[in-house]
Length: 57
Image (cartoon, rainbow, N blue to C red; front, side, top):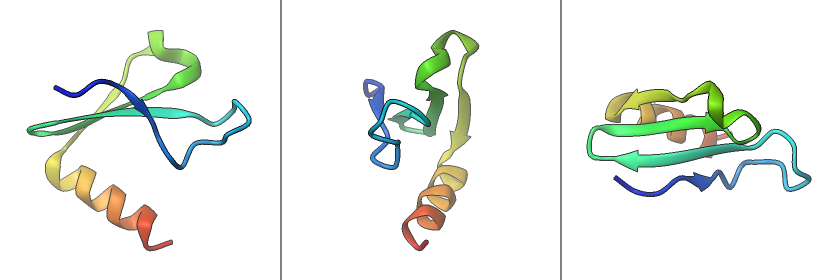
C-alpha cells in the first residue's frame, strides 16, 4: 500500500485539504485536518470514476 499524499486539488492555503493513498483494490481518502476521523475507501471502479470526473471539469 502506498503512503498517504496530499491531493493536487487541495487548497494551497491550508484549508480544504484531502489526502489519498492508492492500493491494489482502489484508494482511501481522508481529511488532512481531521485524520483521526478515519477515511473513506473507494474500490477501483469508484476511484477511477471520481478521478475521471475531476479531470474533466
